Length: 328
Image 1: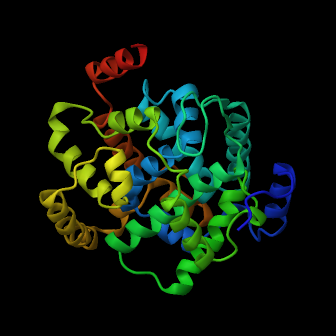
Image 2: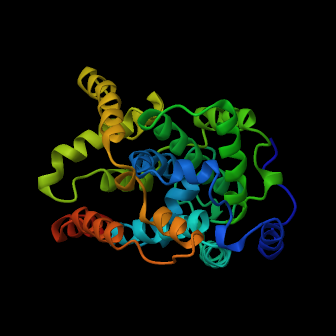
């Protein structure tokens, strides 16, 4: 598969998407898409840690976040802003999706800098750019593969044709932030081959900022949540390769393996018993209301979402320790 391709033109991409959109209220996908079916499920957040770690194992991503992001100072705010953009492109109407695509692209244009260590295939001093197509493709791939992995583990299996459709739809999402279809695998089978090859390659390496950021993201935001954080770390570690678990220093002994194996049946049982409304992101609920002609905020969902984000906000002492580490 070829990563390089013609110069990316966001304006042209947006015009093409708009031209083939039947109803601007539906946005890029709309009801009936596999993207809405999969991405509406709150359970896919269980794959967020896995996707984040796989992204951080690409030195371009790790150094970009370390040098340009406010994640260590405001992890919850960063999480919220990231998902606002993602959900705007997936569930928003066409104008909303377009605004987010332009905003994300403008941010990425400014993000560049040096990799200051010899890591993986890169020599010290090698310069990265957030618009590098191969790095963007990897970020996109981690989201696609993690969403499918968690959906099929927590909700239920998808047919081969639905997996194909989900991947094909995801290529439109990728084009909104810089990866045109000509630069992504042309089929789900080719995507699986690309993903496996990249996992096994030297490109993915736990650089210094990768290990530091991974340790910060997988620590309890407050002491009360230590048991839950340990469990989430195990669930996340179980979805990584042995090599990356070792490089990220994630424990993976008999106890962790047994806990991981027991977790997914329990998760499936819980999800199956939840009412549909409790399973879905507010952005999806609001999208359905919009299409039905009742544009309104999902007040209950947003209230619960805000409470959850507040609950996982790290304490000042946790943030202070991270600030001291970075300063030292």
